[in-house]
Image (cartoon, rainbow, N blue to C red):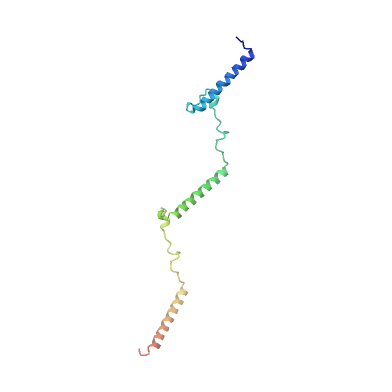
Length: 142
């Protein structure tokens, strides 16, 4: 029988260890349902501040600007929905929306000053006199 030298025994042990590791890797690849088993406690620690999946922290001015932009976008969306769906109607609950200003509304009659009222009465009296004159001219028999 051939007796192995010490170097050959170490080489053979190294090859067998690599083959066992490759067999374990192939088994893990072919059977993912088995899962991973770990016993090292350092594998369970997490750094919540410097990890890549951590959300970036914004400065106050960026956060305020983002909130303002989101509010504007929500208002634009509400306006677009109201424009595209007129059948929905408008619902309002503010009591001040139902009040009317009878003095400064567009359909309110203009308030005349005293001078304008006298001028108007004078013009209407002249128009009535002219009408009577025209009627007398057209119908002299009356």
